[in-house]
Structures are given as structure tokens and as C-alpha cells.
Amino acid sequence: MTRISETALEALGEIPDGSTVMIGGFGSAGQPVELIDALVEAGPTGLTVVSNNAGNGDLGLAHLVELGRIRKIVCSFPRQADSWHFDAKYRAGEIELELVPQGNLAERIRAAGAGIGAFYTPTGYGTPLAEGKETREIDGKNYVLEYPIHADVALVKAHRADTAGNLVYRKTARNFGPIMAAAARRTVVQVSEVVPAGSIDPEAVVTPGIYVDTVVAVGGSTALRQGTGEATWQEVAG
Image (cartoon, rainbow, N blue to C red):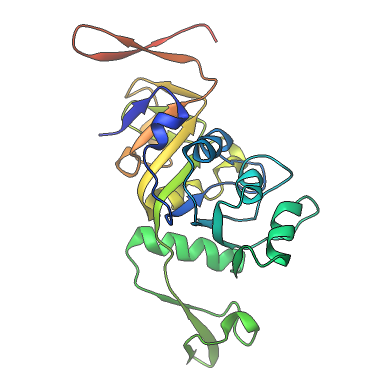
């Protein structure tokens, strides 16, 4: 059963030092900033973070990098014009980088959720990214063997959830959210609003609630009302 939390910190729960954390987002689009802020407040260190990039500016993932909480980052775009915190940490030898082509990153995450043991891809063959990896020729084309990326917890931003944990996303903010939700042992999701179960058209559900452990509404239009022994959801003016 999906749990609905009242605060991001409560939703986050316990994350031990050294955990592997997937963080959704493509730049700032779909980045679960409030959950990352809760992660900063919770205080775990020595994290391995799996993300598309290494943070932008001074907020969200970039702030986590700045604080030195991340031991290793697995991403596709570590250096951008506003990734100065990662750049400084990397040049100082204070953070480890595993650079993964974006398609390979997405497929390695998806493979974890799908229970795939490994897969061959042509991307990266013949480059330094393939050094030390198994290669194979298939039908005259060379491939590199890649393994799934699993995580202890995934932090995801969606647009709307129902009380059963079913998710819909807002346009390109969808990006890595669905595959990360399926690839982690525990998935925590921040949304703009939570609606009663059945309010979302089943055909519109992107991430089924079976993959979602905890949901928190940040700046949303719903509130939890305690009834006689049962919790119900009631819309309030937003």
C-alpha cells in the first residue's frame, strides 16, 4: 500500500549513509527539489547518486553536491555552464564520476526495473567508456555488455497521484521518473496534488502504484482529513 505523507522529510524516511539514490529530472525539469532538500536535512553522507546530470546552479542536486554528501555520481551530463559545484568537487578529487551515455543510462535503469540481467549495446564501443567491459560481435556489429543500475531509493517528481499511488506526469517533466520508480527498492514521489483513488483515468496512468511506496503533495490542492478511523481526501481551495 502506498503511504501518503504530510511532509517531504516524513516521506523520505530513513536513508542510511552510503545508499544509492536515483534522482529524476532532466536539468531542472522534473527534479524533485523538495525531496532533495529533505535529503539534505536528513543528513546521510557517502551517497551514490544516479541522475541525468550533476546539478544546476545552487539548488536541489547541486546543493547536495556542494555539501559534499555525494561520494559518487553516475550521470550523462556532469558539466554544464551552471554545474560549478560538481566541477569544483571533481577537480579537487572529492567526488567520483561514472560517465554513462544517456541512452545507456536510461536502458540500464530500465533493465533494473524489468529484471534484465545485462544487455548488449553498440553505444560506447571503441571508446574509453568501454574499457574493461565485455564486448561481442553480433551479425557483424560490435557491442558492449552493460549491467542494470539498481538503487536503494528513487526520488521522483510527478504531477498528480491518487491515494493508491498511481502517477501521471507533466509533459517533459516525465523524463526519468517512470523507469527510476521501477528500478529502486523504495520509491518516494513528490506531486502537486493527490486525488482520491479512481480519479485518474487508468489509461492515463504512467507509473502504477505498485511501484510507489510514499507520496507527498508539495504546494498541492489536497489535504488529509482524519475521519472516524479512516483517512479520506478532501479538496481544499488552492
